[in-house]
Amino acid sequence: MDNKNDEFERLDFADDFFHAAEINAQYDEEERQNNPKKKNGKNKTLMIAVIAAVAVIAIVCGVYFGFFHGKEEEIPTEPSSTTTTTQAPAVIANPLTGESGYNEAAIGKRPVSVVIDNAAGARPQYNMSAADIVVEGEVEGGETRMLWFFADMTNLPEQVGPTRSARPSFVKFSELFDSVYVHFGGSHSKGNYIGGYEIIKQDNVDDIDGMTVSSCFRRTSDKVSPHNAVLIGENLVAAIEKKNYRTDVDKSSFSALSFNEKVSSVSDIPCNKVTVKFSSKTRSHTFAYNAESRAYSNQGDYNTPVNFTNLIIMYADSTYIDKQNYKGAGNTETYLNYSLTSGSGKLVSCGSIVDFDWSVDNGILSFKDKNGKELKLNPGKSWIALASANHNGSVSIDE
Picture 1 (cartoon, helix red, strand yellow):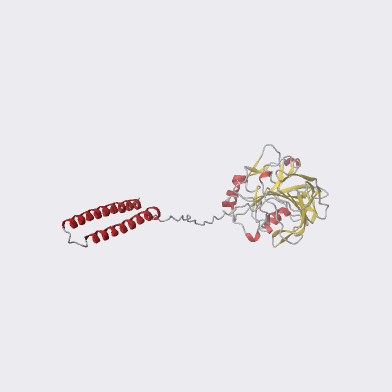
Picture 2 (cartoon, one colour; picture 1 turned 90 degrees about the vertical axis):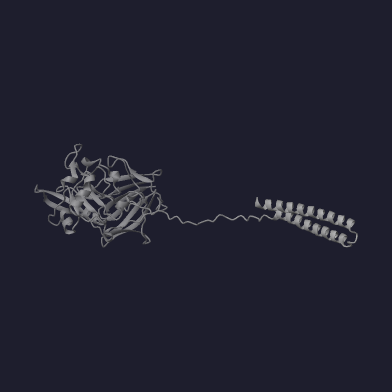
């Protein structure tokens, strides 16, 4: 707008200039008529006219170029862009399942392991699906027992169980993950058999025993003893604190598991159904693959449906040990202990199966593929079977 005003002012000035020139010319003409002696009047008038013409041309050119070209061309400038790098939030994963969405306050804390009854009178168990890892193995009389691991001790179900007594192999397995060991009673040593209580004492295991810590346990009315003692989940932390147990995990005693970023096949060998037998004395468990959920489901062996992403079968040597005159009744009880040192195994996951090797070195359990590389599990819950390598433990698959 200011540029246009300037141009109009220039035009007004030109008009004034012409008007002044005309007046001056008329004045000179009158002077010549009144005074003929002024010989140069005509020349003077001509000079003024020429100057006026030149001035007008200059002004007009200035007006034209100023009006039409005087505006500076606006050069578009690209908006300044500030490059910002957004760092992806750290994934807080459950150390036992590899699944995201884990309680941040539980990171770096010890897990708990709970001994679970698997006799006919104990089934169906309470809240088996809440466990992060379920370990199952033979104990005595052809029966199996389980060890349920929970990564976050502050987030247990209302009740867990039925709980049962400590066995040596399960105490040893609980130590592989630096867990607080929860049980209801325990076996005692006799003859050449070393009982669960003795292993707890020998290895200085932090344990919560239902025989002595009544605040954590109760009896249910829908089952009969000894298959009805359950852990009260919300009372466990207080009991651990009262015992003054360490709650921070000791990384040098914790077997860190490795997981894939997402669920994927572990090999090119299909496996849609798998049957596991712990020894020639036990019954078998069969799991069928569900492609939609990418999990293996067992519909009947536990009297309730259970689902696992990973089925991990560990072959381990086992030893049967007879306890003569068991409980002073003159009978013999045969116990089984596993040798948790090394062996082979099979991983069943995402509709496929692969062989691996396992070993325990300095209290750390590791899984390696047949090329010696760390074996990765799929994110999700795992079922670990301890199958007897020397007493006909077996795995059969259906493609």
